Structure formats: structure tokens, C-alpha cells
Length: 69
Image 1 (spheres, rainbow, N blue to C red):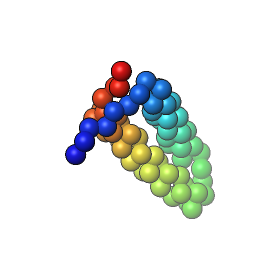
Image 2: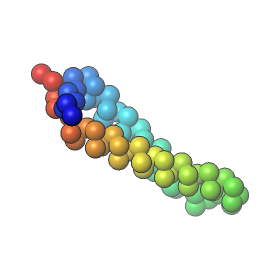
Image 3: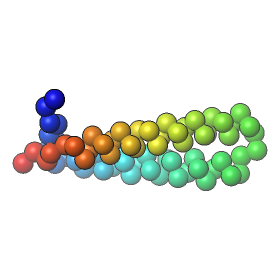
Image 4: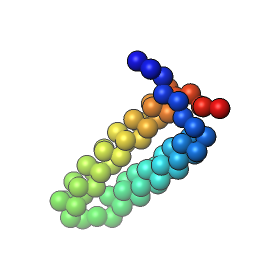
């Protein structure tokens, strides 16, 4: 397996995506408390689970990548 290399702008893009996903996750978690429709709440829970998975995948790929100078 070859090691992934990230250019500086790709590193910054990854940080921006992680920040965006984290904000979306926080908003979905907070909104679940005020939603009374069970179907909508289930959909939001599914979104939370998928977002957590995506954040984990981004973190894992970022941690194993080297910065290209």
C-alpha cells in the first residue's frame, strides 16, 4: 500500500470539510431534542450516524497521510 501525500491546500481543504461535518453533526444532534415527529427523528439519527462515520474516515485518512512539501 502506498502512502498518501497531501499538498498544503489539500490539508486546508480537509480541515474545512472536517469543521463543516462537525458543525452539521452538532446541529443534527441538538435538533433531535426539539423534533417530535418520529420519522424525522429517525432520519436525523441516521444522518448523525453517517456523519460520524464520515468524520472518522476523514480523520483516519488524514492521520495516515504525509504533507507534501
